[in-house]
Length: 441
Image (cartoon, rainbow, N blue to C red; front, side, top):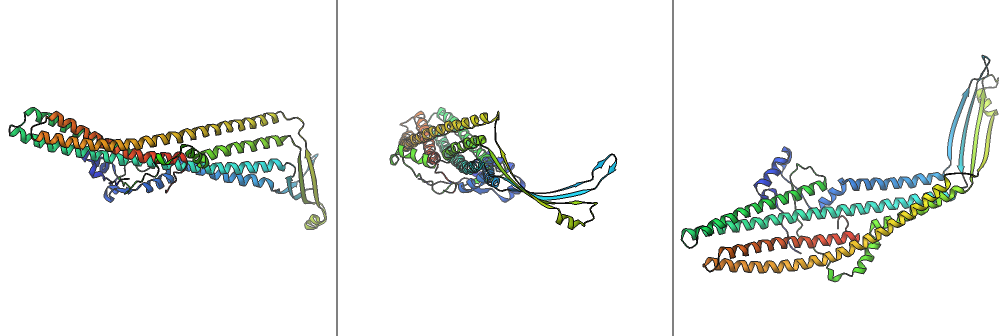
């Protein structure tokens, strides 16, 4: 765990700061940069990410599918009216009007109907699991891009600090040359190193600019806006490889990965599809109930009296027995193949989950070792640089020795920044592969 500093656009160097100001709209430039924290970035991405939006729509469609299947159990209700004026050999005959109300329902193939309802409910649950995994994926991607920006900001600071040191050494050597204590070649060599340090700052700033634009794209923000991405005060490492059991990690992932749960639900849904396909062999029993009345224009009885006198109803029971249906066998075979494919997909997902978790565990252990080594290397490089600087100051060391020591120190400082953020990111990645990286945690 370590403390972090956020960096504003003006601290990134004139070129980068100028780009951000020129790229912003007048209103944005007047209001100043918009500060975005990691939590806010995740919220923004969850609201605007197209994948999450599509998953939300799919979940809603699943809910509508359940409601549609449930309504298959309800009878339909129809109101019909018919008016007719028949003609025969050019002679107009009596006009008539009929009106009726009828309802019908299939009462036999309840097995298929309930299988369809259960399949729709399973698909609805699968949509919820897909949405949960999509939200986890976006959360991890934002964490990754945000950490990349923070790391790039610190890498800029490392190179800026190196540039200041090179500039100070430049002035020191100039004084030594003026006093005749060092040859002019040392000054020329140091001026070249200072120019190289200036280039390193520009390259680091460009890396930060690219990282910022990637994050802006992930968040679907205005690419011409001005933003300041604020680092958290503390980013704890919640998992240590020594405290984890690889087998237990796999069990945790199998119990809580939403995509694995969605794959299992796909198998169950396909099995319900087999039940629906098998039910097509069964007879269908339907019941129709109707009630209506007639009116004839030439009848001397009044309109409402006719409707009252000529009322009638119908009760109809129908049976349909499938004798020859060339598509039934194909439908059943397709349903069974869907089950087989879903099972293959489930097994593949299980294999992927196990591989991802074990790889993330090994990478976490490696990241911890890299951080330990980077800390040791930086301490050694700083001591070596201090010694080389003292030797050069008293004329006992050469500029080559000092240059090599400074390059080692800068490289070690940069490697330490990379190792710190790498460890945090590996923690987030393991949480993601375990299905535990939730928005807001």
